Image (cartoon, rainbow over the protein chains, first blue to last red):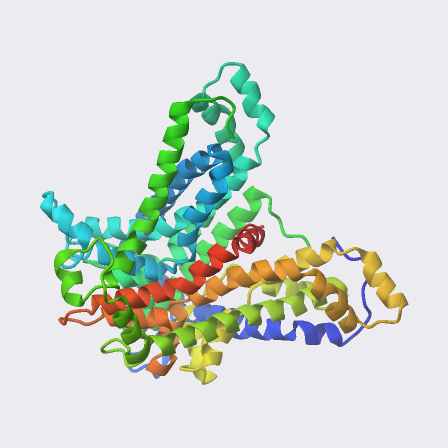
Amino acid sequence: MEKRVVFKNRVLPYILVAPQIVVTVLFFIWPASQALVQSFLQEDAFGTASAFVWFDNFADLFAGAEYLDSFRVTLTFSSAVAGAALSVALLLAVMADRALRSATVYKTLIIWPYAVAPVVAGVLWFFLFNPTVGMLAFFMKKAGLDWNHTLNGTQAMTLVIIAAAWREISYNFLFFLAGLQAIPHSFIEAAAIDGAGPWRRFWTIVFPLLSPTMFFLIVVNIVYAFFDTFGVIHAITRGGPNYATNILVYKVFNDGFINLDLGGSAAQSVMLMIVVITLTVVQFRFIERKVHY
Amino acid sequence: MMVEHRPVLTFVTHATLILGALVLAFPIYVTFVASTHTLEVVTKSFPLLPGSHLVENYLRALTVGPRDVGATVGTMMLNSLIMALGITFGKISISLLAAFAIVYFRFRLRIVFFWMIFITLMLPVEVRILPTYKVAADLKLLNSYPGLIFPLIASATATFLFRQFFMTVPDELCEAHRIDGGGPMRFFFDILLPMSRTSIAALFVILFIYGWNQYLWPLLITSDQQYYTLLIGIKRMLDVGEGQAEWQIIMASTILAMLPPVLVVIFMQKQFVRGMTETEK
């Protein structure tokens, strides 16, 4: 797709794109290429000399159990976040779609948690489940469930999943509701006349028609759980207890900034870039929201 | 939509929605309640109804600041606001200009630039933190407002959105403008910019929330309390080690941290929804 009518000027377009390009090169392309270079280097203990070590940093990553563990934790975390946020949002959206005139009121009541930052979501749920001052932790103890997410890895994972999924429900709800409202009324009516009840209509007509939205949201939710949940982890568990919630993004931060392992952190960055690029390509290919120029 | 009358189902519908809305709001409600009591009450008796220390707690947070952080919530809110607005206006302006160049001019590096911008879509700050930090350090951007803003203002999303919009602007407008002897910048300011109003408003809402909610980047580059954003400050308040966290102040600060983006979503809902759906195209 091209414009037929354009302006003629040799210098102006370069001046216009310059700010965007300067920022992109300085803060995106240069750092990303540095990560790539770093990932093939190893520094000595004093940081004075570095040697080219081919794929040693990557080999180190996959040789140790720690990185694979972090991968496993990330997969559990992201599939649980996506699963929880998608199913709750779908239920609420189907209900809101049925609620007709009051749908807009419910919409307002449901979409606002999206505006809450992941780290703040972390603080909110951390407070509720805090073993010493948390209300929910207190009631669970009374009910006989000993809650302490600072010691119990499964409980820690459950908590970060709830906190991360909580704000994503709003996002999914918005897209599901839009998808539902786009389904032609006549399809549903025709099925109703043929005697299909609401349950049957949902699974045979509505759900299949919603599948593009569903697929799109699955990818978006996984990207969210992989990359935007650093704040949730940092506020609630700091990757613990005993690495039970040490997701990849948290680990790359921890190894780079706290443990100062440059080569290892760079190799992890490169792995993450591969994940993001794969997910982006999948998203563009399957959803046919192709970019034209 | 509803095709037949089923009272039971209608009841279930509303019950589910009300329950859903309540569960979603519950953590915020508890936080608000905690921000209106003394520390003693908050940590000992799990209050469910607001107390009488609202003004006291919020005033203390805003003007004196929480213990061990070294900056008032007032200062940190101002920092968050500067960062959020800086990112918002920065992204919108550089994206408008870049999209204008890519759509309305033919130049040699056009396709190269387009792909360079496209790549940024794929590389969130989370995957390249260490090298980006190094660039910021080399440019002396640590502990500064430009450091909080510039690394986050390159956005492929906004550029694509404006590009998409500019493609739909009828060629006749540009043609007529040229016949009248107008130059490209006049066209940009007098015709294109006013026509982009709704897209700009939608993006403004989305980007303001995005900017206000930034966490990892400010965490990396601010070590001087005077540049803490509110989200960094709240996290610092929690890190008291063996000491007792001042929950009533933390909860008041948390409410203050949520207020601006939540109000924006509620009062500019139309722009918010539009922005959400458009930026995902």
